[in-house]
Image (cartoon, rainbow, N blue to C red; front, side):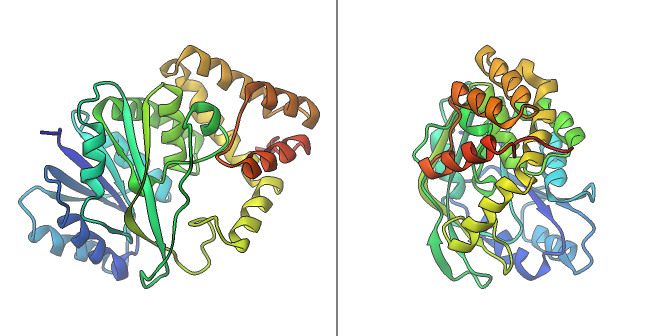
Length: 311
């Protein structure tokens, strides 16, 4: 039997879509979960939907708490810090729909592993009405700290972390809050790969991801999404994210393997170096993204001095 699982859901004005997601969680083939919904001050009836759902579940299986009201990433960090340290942690968005084996596949992988380990998977990208559009990319790996420094590869809404991995995340969460990171799943990938955790990215699709109009970050296979992401490499957005990640990781570098501590220190120097020197360092560090084109784009941005942040 696996340890109890905390499903951590951040909510904000999601009344239109949250009930189907809650129902999909209730239909999981795996048992032993407890849902904690942290609401950031919804005004559209979201809290009432969660309360109504809780009445249909076992007493204590669903808890509704107040979020920090500082955005979704901070809300997920808030949930991470208060998760049961003796259990496992699954993140949940408020508007997806989980397939019945979303938890079971992660449980099957994590069972029997004593050290820190994390499971993630692919999603089925859908339109706002949950009509399937395409499968999310299947990255080949490897999933290491050299990759995590410059790419987010573990979709947060598919993550399941064991208790040893959760302990690392909880130890690192305060620094992440102070640094005001932009992505909790990227941060989790960095912390856990840096610590040498076992990382599994399943090729199976475990949930339906709802892509809202105007959101180009949910998928990266369209020309529009690729152009938007490329622009972020060169307009300072990516550099700002890297700087925040660095500020989140440096105070907790002692959680990492010695070789990854050295990489983190070297990367901090890269973020303040002029383009040519930064490029030489990135090449020497053997940093990479999951595709050759992705790596080439980061190298080009590095040479152009676009990894240096104003913040």
